[in-house]
Length: 374
Image (cartoon, rainbow, N blue to C red):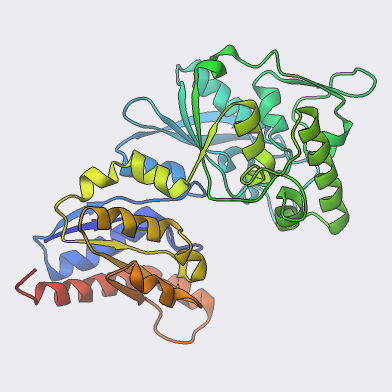
């Protein structure tokens, strides 16, 4: 029997490669001779680089850059067969890089992301997948652009310092993009994100996401005003869906670097060669931390099931929990399971996730192999 394991991460419990390992252990207990193909996945957010490297048989690379407040750090990228570089913007501008009391929503910058891209360009890379998610920034990608050669000037004609944050966007009076690295014009940039928020307004990057990054109500308003001003500098009204991803990084990559937004889930499946590799499988197993009505709207696990269905392969869902609206998933999956065992503190449930996934896959394999027609 052939199983394809294609899970998302289980937030705050296991990353997708660890989920694959737990499921593999259980299958092996029940059927040691089973053929198992692990394709750990992500949707552009945390874990995308490592998932892409494992799923697409790439290699991990490390580069020195700076974090959201300028501290030096080492960021990891993946180089895939064919030369595609996979980058998580959160590796240099992520909220997890800051302590809970160290958030600085007005100062946090994407400058380090630009430094990272610059080094990849210098290494000869011209094909990028940039995952957006988990950012500490609301600078509209301005810091990144500075690292790539853009210059911003204030109303006195003075050059603004490198590494500006969202709080400085309103000070920009003139933007000069003529110094952007010429290699960018010959590069393909694909933006891996499933965020649909616009850059500005009540559903924009600042209003919706800045409070999660430590911004007060007044700071969120200031950031939104800065983003509106910033967009207007480039003849944009800030209303395009998706441009608000990662504090406006979606806007800079699409509008100014001519990147193409794509579904993070679809893009990772493409990079992993999922359609080719799922052929001939008996079952696909996928899962995530919590499946609910949002999952039914087309998140990663549903995308996996739909792609597998094209190849005639049924998909089984096992998630940490099944929430309201999860019944809508029954039309997408052959079966839906939760590895929760009853009311318990969240911390205990998270700690037991690996053990429970292994138990689930062991019992599932016993059931499936008890049917001689399979």
